[in-house]
Image 1 (cartoon, rainbow, N blue to C red):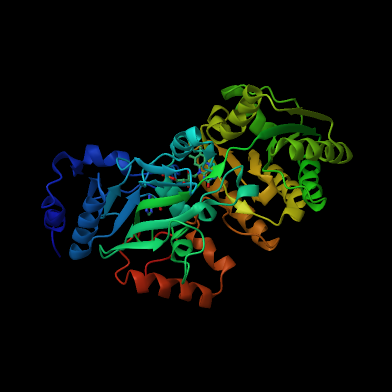
Image 2: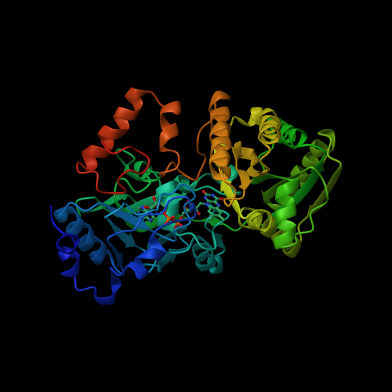
Length: 460
Ligand SMILES: Cc1cc2nc3c(=O)[nH]c(=O)nc-3n(C[C@H](O)[C@H](O)[C@H](O)COP(=O)(O)OP(=O)(O)OC[C@H]3O[C@@H](n4cnc5c(N)ncnc54)[C@H](O)[C@@H]3O)c2cc1C
């Protein structure tokens, strides 16, 4: 068994100097991610600055049999970027350049550490934007978005990250540099890019990503509809879609989530049990006519109050309130779990009523804020970790909610990934044969299971 010093000799030979971290105080900052329940000490952290350095670092890990974890901004909410004990973290956040924006092909080529929002900032001067908008978009990286196939409020109409990635330059777990996909839609052959998106880092490290950009819409209108129950707001969502309207976003917040947002960024939402935010975008004429239909539908769905606006500042404040909700819950509770599950949109009203019942029965407060149009729930389970057994009871409730999602024909994750947190639930969704197929695919690419070992799939 080689000593820790021997294991990382190959990394030392790369001549990274101070960009190879090995001191416990330096490593501590990389021990956890957005889900602080997990914490592991890596053996070393490589602060990579180029594709060549990522290739060299992965080769060194492969030669020494060291597991490694790619890390972007560390905002994963499922333990995805937690290090493997005794392994290496390859941090990509210094590879943060938008390499080019091409307005003719409406594409951007970016390094993996580029912050999501910076892509739209670079594209704006060409009248373009990058559509996937996780609520963490001001801090999360494109590499992390690709690995988790991240979503966001506006993915209802535009699709998830995988719908906006055309090509990926990736370093496979043995250090080979490959190019997947192309710089345009419709490349020939198997969809390797699609396979890489959402692989949670198991197939290697993305070092360059070609993204699709879309035009900034001519008109945008945001409506707030207040309801006296979560069920009524959930049913309204199903009704809007049933009537054939396709808003770009449909989000719901309950009273507790609104209370948290109010304590934090003060969006001034109307007091109610549940708030539905609906956004329309497109050509002015289309938005104007859809707005008439939407107003009528909201009224018929029993909304107590409807307010629509196209004022950019007012709209920005509405979205600041929604997008700050996860972190704002910190104002209400010292600890909380951000759960991520999916149900068919038609079952929204039902699942919300059941979560409410579970919350009452367990005596644990649950705030709901979620991508209602996709049926993608984010129950925030509030607890105080200083109380004996409180964390276990909260995790138990989180598990019950996931089981409920599955029983209604949904999924254990909509966008936050399986990571470490949900590995135990995979078998509730997939048969043993399905899981074996996933393992075989993974081992075909990474026989030694070095890349992100233990994430999503158990170690075999
Ligand atoms: C307040 C808050 C709000 C959030 N809102 C949303 C939301 O609306 N929608 C949503 O989908 N998620 C959301 N998230 C979760 C998180 O921000 C996303 O999963 C995001 O994509 C993670 O990006 P990151 O750069 O932080 O990745 P990290 O946490 O660093 O890594 C995430 C995973 O990607 C892998 N990885 C990172 N870089 C690469 C790379 N270059 N190549 C291969 N694998 C890589 C890591 O190994 C890990 O498995 C939210 C998180 C927070 C804290």
